[in-house]
Length: 253
Image (cartoon, rainbow, N blue to C red; front, side, top):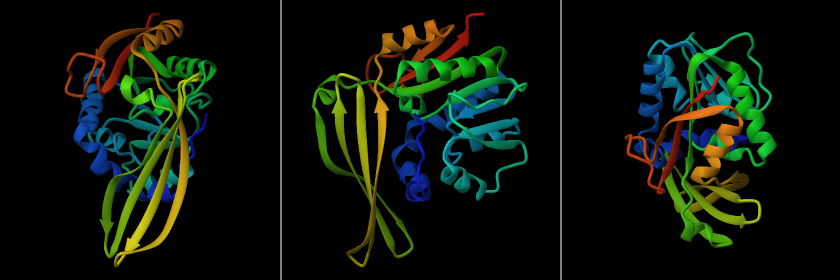
């Protein structure tokens, strides 16, 4: 599954997720883990560099891989440092050989865009190929809220509103679920308003797989990884089934 964020999403991404995600602490978590692990860093699904840029700013040689040309366009417009290289590619097929990395990570649900077991195992095998001896792999998923995912759908809800000059941007979200395949289709309507009148809108859709804790553990074991740490939040709290599933893993051999 390749998630190709379009121009509308790429242009609004940083503003939307500054409001929605920066408070989670994920940027500091991955930066600290990268520095503690040592070695070069690879982010799979780097997007606009929200998480990767602070690591590169610390002087660590980094590579960011992403399938979306629009997200990489936004990142390049930020004039990233010379120690950060950008590559267009998908999690299952990118190849940076013979380069190896001390720390590989996928922030903010990237792994959940891999909808099938074949895709998930291919991505994990690709991670193993790119890890240096003793390297670590980290990623995060949302922990399913059982009451919430029991519903077949969720109605339209405005989840964020931001401003840029005279323009106001509103994002409306709704969800449809396929319980048999553990896949949710998330729809986003991006609206631009000015002087109380809607100027234009664009609707995009993404599919995401939801995972349960032991499902993740079995998948990693099948791919040849052992879990080093499992957290329920980016502050290092123990996993308790709520909020986040944050995994730090290493190859078993």
